[in-house]
Image (cartoon, rainbow, N blue to C red):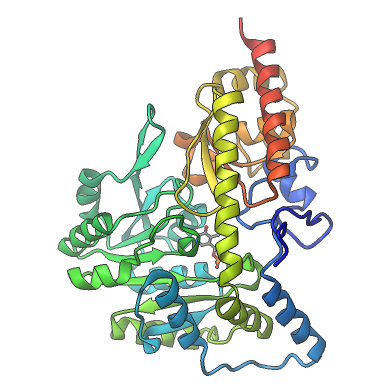
Length: 417
Ligand SMILES: Cc1ncc(COP(=O)(O)O)c(C=O)c1O
């Protein structure tokens, strides 16, 4: 692989990318001109071996129904190699997008009105799944320490909320806090869940991008006698999320059979030709690329940490333990942003950016940087946060941070007494 593989420019403007579409950017940032650092896909080319496979497949010119005997085994080899997790291929079910599996499992495991617990802040579609299926959301707020700017699990609250819930949708590593959970955390979590008869769906889509050891929840749950399903995917890992390929791993055979039956009822058992080809070639050949990606992402984190410390002391960068997204605490500037919005109601009009919030509009309008607003992750209580996607070339991050610094200078000069 070329040395500068991750820093080379990749022009995604005018492609099918949702992240780079001016209308979708406008929807959160109040201007379509803002540079996108939002939706969780990266601006890097996929592993060269995957691109070669995709090109060769495209050239073959025949795109019929696919069938690959070894696809479960390929995932199991990956799980063993990356996470030292020995999985029986018979316990692996291949699905399309992970959200489809999580929604189906939620539908199967609960009835209308049942409590479904979700740690918040949350990847918003989890909240939508609960709402769409007319279940009752049991929000489990993470603790947030305003001094150290760290999130953590609130164990007392968990035990209390388990009484109201049948199911927990857990996210490990956690989006958006970037928390990577220890074996002790997962042991405690599954022990308490088991005590209360709460089943766990563990979304481990960001697991391969962890900077320290990731512990799969399923074997730990099994040891505790807790019913759980783990969902994993090559999508975030190899930047192939548009291809919608994931796996669900079961310990409970009855539950697995029930899930497979539901997939059959809905004719959801087949993945597309391209997603299969691309996902499997990534698992087979993408590991060297992933190793280099992890180095590059950690360099981006260092760059951001240093920049925030030196030049953006009024914002707090919450250093993630995994992946390419980070929460930023903007509570020190939010009062000034409110003044800017009051002075410019037409600019900040929510009708023009219905999917954004105060801060995403501010950074869009004043810095031309499109970020996910904290409210997207669970409502007004997260309004002083934004989520920054740093899965991009470091030169773009530097420029964006300089624009954010200037925007804050403008705020301070205009509205501070
Ligand atoms: C935690 C988490 N789960 C699921 C998804 C989406 O998964 P899929 O596209 O496979 O449905 C994302 C995408 O950002 C995510 O961050």
